[in-house]
Image (cartoon, rainbow, N blue to C red; front, side, top):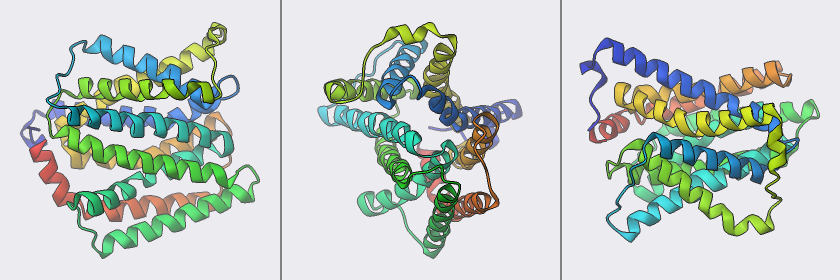
Length: 311
């Protein structure tokens, strides 16, 4: 059971805020690292090596294994791995081939909308009041403005935006599955490691039909090694630990607020590192997306508090 943040020492609350901020900052800049690797690696290869490094890092962090109670529970882990790891990574990385890193980062922020819709219509545990539909309308307008901005600067293909949205949908399904897995109260590191493992294993049968080769000689370059360590150990491994600590210290509601910093970090990082243009139209689109996400999230505050108490 998650301990309420108000009953914790102020030092741990501060550490929780810092942990959430670090995780979001790292996740927001992964788009830049992935974009930097795409010259020598395919999206499939990036995911293959990144997930393998992440699994080994999490295994070293907590080598104990989860003992599941049934085949159905094992299938939940497998489905979560396929949706949140394999599909999400492949769609996201492929989207980066066709569109700007900043666009991908912002479009993936629509995932909470899809999560709410799936939870409402499939799990029947989320209400969708008028505020939610106002929020999603504003976000859609923001996405349109952002996409239009991309076409205006002639550095975007609509296919990339579509793939990014599909990645957000895959993450939404993953979030619902993780919500069900979370009810089993397994340690977060062990849960994450098992999900990553199944996502990695699910990729093996389709490798012959994908653009993939081992090509270990490419790791002779230090920038390549550093990028993969950043993505594997940092973004896919330790950041999940930091995020889970933040949830335990602050609660799910306060921690979730940091999610909305992801597009901001992504746009800033891509502008500074990749020199991708950020126009006034793009800023308006980003603002509408963030406002829409905020409005839709507010209606879930009571439900999220209940989930936090039961977690």
